[in-house]
Image (cartoon, rainbow, N blue to C red; front, side, top):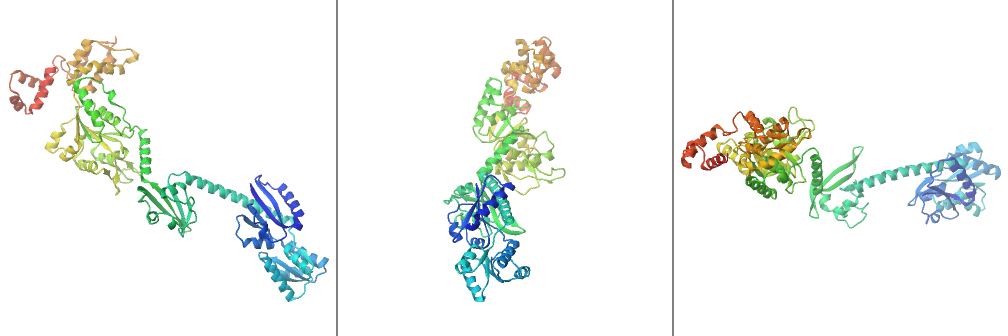
Length: 618
């Protein structure tokens, strides 16, 4: 409820009640505004000592007295119309037969005595008063100047004139003046309500923000501060508004002069942003925003998690790896152990052995499983574009670059995993840059001079002999040794053909055409086990899909398999060895020593052992 009080002499109380009733009936007055009348007989200060309203409307001497004090309410002046002054002077002339009138007015009232004299044909002596004491002083001055026939003024003036036996005419406020005062009060109330709404919105916004916010005036006194800032600064004052900032704000904060400065507060890193408040180009204060660095990092992670919705996620887990053979289970067990560490992993395996499947499984079994998984094939993009893809760029960094710039894959993978397939195809010119990123854990976008720290686990994969490439200089040895911290070798399908008993039904279920179940006869699977599967599981998947599409009966026989395999490879299933393997097989049949065979073939004894083992299985 908003309370508005009119200060009037008790002699005018009845008139004012009527004025207010009539005016409010004509006015769209809010229901939460209450008008009341306070009648004065003594000093105005005592009348308002215990009043708890919001607005006071006063006139003349009452207004002048209240204006000099300090009150919680808003003071509105009820102006004294010139017509009311003229009427009072004319009344003194006609009713009191006055030829000389002493006119007492407030210091805020402006009158032109000669103007009234010319209209009323009386002599007017004007006296300005601002307090009760000044009324007494001006009466003494009036008596010094000479006798007056009548006094015109407010209630206090008329009361004092009566005490001195001087005739008087009171200055009254007409209905129009009352209406003007009420309308001004309602206008001020509406403006105040809107200002309160703005302030409440601003306060609500500031209090809802997670950051600490301080607003200082030009003398560095605190104008506004939110509760989060009070907690961050460890202030004991619940409301330090209007106090000098240097008396309660930590010195480390007050010494910040540059925007985006990181300081220590209570053993925590805090980013301080500082901006001036400019009014017409002049500095009128400062706003400082404090934010915990860890909160910024969490926000960054949240943004990156949103990016995950765009596909930066790992879909596969270890349970999706099909097969129970010893070589495969050994690789799975080793990969599970790797997932529990945060070290980089190098996966070695032929094309189609499931390198990305293992990389995604390692990611999903690690502590980074809720963070992005970003996959990148080093051999699938033009060499001159790889750098911008990995490290990103700022707007206008090069011809054709986006004006907004672009995040690099390392930034997208922050806190998560970056899988770089076909790492052996990475150009030598970029290998030094990659090595630095892996060692320093920071990147710099193309065209930028800012260093961006990153936290990324890198899993690389290759289907070439990267060790040999490093030995011959085709791959940087220092980068190879940096990548090869954890080494995971994936077995080819031909070394674990027993897994076809699970793989074939598993893949077949994915390709059942028109909902017709497809069944492989045991002889068909046995025939597939005799194949060398140079394309590994990827090739097996394609063959199974082809067989499912071509079958008319839903039953896959050995003949069906033989036909599809021979058509796909152009060679017999009965002799699935490559020419190189056939030569090796012939040499083995001559019962020569392993050392002699290795020397003839130009390979190591371990490679020879593996090759002969594969042949014996076939």
